[in-house]
Every structure is written in structure tokens, then in C-alpha cells.
Amino acid sequence: KQEVTQIPAALSVPEGENLVLNCSFTDSAIYNLQWFRQDPGKGLTSLLLIQSSQREQTSGRLNASLDKSSGRSTLYIAASQPGDSATYLCAVPTQGGCEKLGFGKGTNLTVKP
Amino acid sequence: EPEVTQTPSHQVTQMGQEVILRCVPISNHLYFYWYRQILGQKVEFLVSFYNNEISEKSEIFDDQFSVERPDGSNFTLKIRSTKLEDSAMYFCATPGGWGYTFGSGTRLTVV
Image (cartoon, rainbow over all chains, first blue to last red; front, side, top):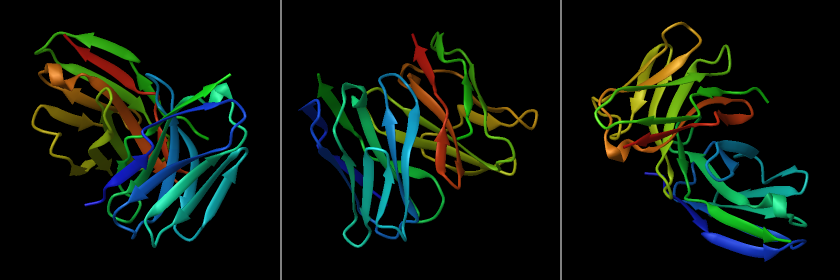
């Protein structure tokens, strides 16, 4: 059974800092990994999808890396802004293919002005 | 990125009442999913729906839950007799080439 873990559970940084969020998964036979952002009481907004054949994916100030063999992904946020404050979730297909997702519990990020 | 629309955004219901949550998924997609998130907990898979049939369901998805695609576009999740522990955010989702797209969710509060 695929288990997804995210550390840290919470992170508070001053504006402008670069930061790294971590995600680990137990079954490395994944098809892809997706990072989401969730604002309080809101839905999930997709940030990045990284395919199993890729090592990195970038969108603006966000960069996601994937190391399948070690079962890890990182989300790097450059030059953080107060508007980045949210919960960041990673998710992987639970049976390797394009199927139901298993989620981590998320990292609650606060960026202080 | 195409959108998945969910209604209502918030529903308050009394314990034992039936609720129907609605989703309008991305057109021409065949796979649909319902997930839920209890406050402070992980997003959990409930059920997947493919070609007008349930393809997989979790242990959470008991006889009190049902899904339908009544008119070829809307996709509904029905809870027949709500319990306090059904209070959660419910999300509809559909996969595509860009990954999964989630709706904005329905916050269900059972009192």
C-alpha cells in the first residue's frame, strides 16, 4: 500500500527566503507525482505534475524534483512571498498508474512579511 | 486549465438527512473521482467512476453512499442518511494529461 509522508508538517519563514518542502512515498513504481496548493477551506490547485521519466519540473518560482529510486520529491519555492502561504500537498497514484491518488498530510507554509 | 465545478460550496444538514453533492467535470472525460477531507486530515479517496459504473471504492464508501451520472454531464455523490462523522470537504476530480483537476469542493456540515 502506497504511503505518502510530508515533512515538515508546518513551516514559517520570513518573506524572501528560499525553501524546500519534502515528500516521500513507499512504493517507487509510480507513474507521476503531483504537487497541489490548498488555501484554508478551499479546493486543491495543481501546481506541478512531474512524470516518472522526469527529474525536474519548473513553473515560475516553483521547482519540483523527483527521485523515484529513493521514493522522494522536493518542492522548491524561490523568493517566498506572503501570498505563498498555504498548505502544500503531494500526491501519487496508489497503484503505479493513472489511478486514485494517495496524499500526504501536507506542509502548512506561512510566509511572514 | 479546464475547470471542475462543484455545487453547493457549503451545505449544512441535520443528522439522518440525505444530501446530494454535485459536480460538473471536464467534458469528454470518462474517469471521475470523489475524495473527501476531514478537517485536519489527509485527502482520502472515496470512489472512482468509469464509463457510468463504479470502478473502485474505498472502505469508507459504504451502503450510505452512492454515485450517479444522471444526465451525461453532472456527476453526483449522494449520502443517504448523514452522520456527524460525514462532516468534511468533498472534492470531485478528473485526471488528464496535465494531472488531476480538482473541483473547489463542497463543505458538508452535519449537525
